[in-house]
Image (cartoon, rainbow, N blue to C red; front, top):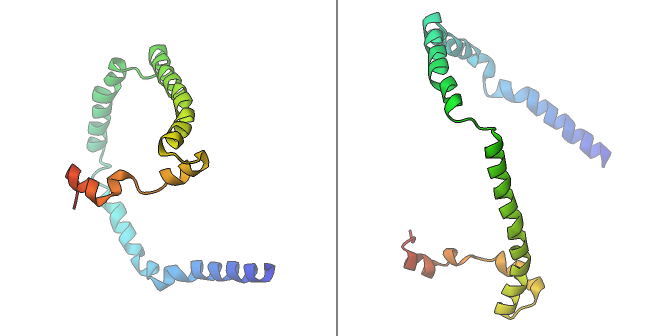
Length: 132
């Protein structure tokens, strides 16, 4: 087993070394320099100053308008989490209720739920206007 694994690793290493040459990366290296040169105008001092001005005049003042990590926002988010936690009680009761309604054992419900959803049924899709 270890012998086969060693050969697989060796083959993978050889492929990683050979692949760049096989697809011509060394010949394409000059194209990378052309791409770097194309960023030259963007990095002009005037353009950098304009970008910095946008940041300081637009985004920094927005931080004063919409503070994100206030205690009020944290408490509101924690309230949402409490609501989701409360849903767990209903979710626990959902499987037995569905099993009773479908007249099937509870252990069959997960397989039933994993099947095609009604929206996947072409007849239902036609009714909803979702058909292709």
